[in-house]
Length: 378
Ligand SMILES: [Zn+2]
Picture (cartoon, rainbow, N blue to C red):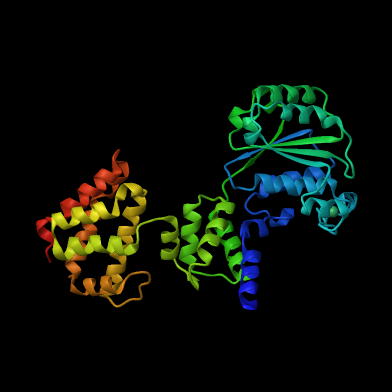
């Protein structure tokens, strides 16, 4: 019984890697060097703007940066940092204000999700009440997430504030769609752009998480996670968390299964039919089973090329990971010339496939056409 409870507690503690690994100071924010430098400089020079606009795709650190920036503005170490920026960390994460920020209970930090308050006057009321003095910090800071969803009334309230911004208040608008922020507001914001996180930086970050959390993960599995999450750190970490309990070691195939991509065995079967059975009927049944339309066509194309590569390696006794014993057995029956011809067909069609307006259809017809190619019976 005791061990069950312990395990349960352990699992609870390990859940939500993204929250646990959320950056708490500027140094921990990855891939946004220029933006971070601008914010740190404005803190150092004591030159803060009344309204900031953070724009960029989701999951690239806008909200996290806003929280760190907020903590820094109200940190009791700010004065020391201005005098000696190299000796003092900002935010310090230790003062009363920083501790309140960490616990999510800071009285001078108000976070509003505009998406869930759209069209409601309470956002306007909150904005109009912004002239209130801060309780413990030097500024009352409002973070308005998904700011493009604000109602017209809220934007008008904003304009009023912008005409005469209260000294003790600072707004941070975060948005994925800056074009939807009305021009009169946008032109008065200090705008900062958050780009997608560069994959090398994100990979190093994920590797650090794996090392610290004792997650064993193949390098290629991390590459796949990064590719599939388009530079969104939060999504990448969430995916890592989704797959971490599926086995002792996370491989590319574990990630594929978690993503809902076809099992490699399903794609291996396509090659078996193409190279051994050479039967259009069987292939059509198999294609129905895989149902290519559920997946990104270029992804399937790439997986098929990977399998041809694996086949080569098997033929020449080189190490291959992630394929079944059945595939190894099939490839031992296939001639090298067959693989060369197969590869030539893929190469010849790749440009056409990439340009096709109907890639799923193209892929299906291409595979069916391969079955009866005369010159590739070996
Ligand atoms: Zn502090």
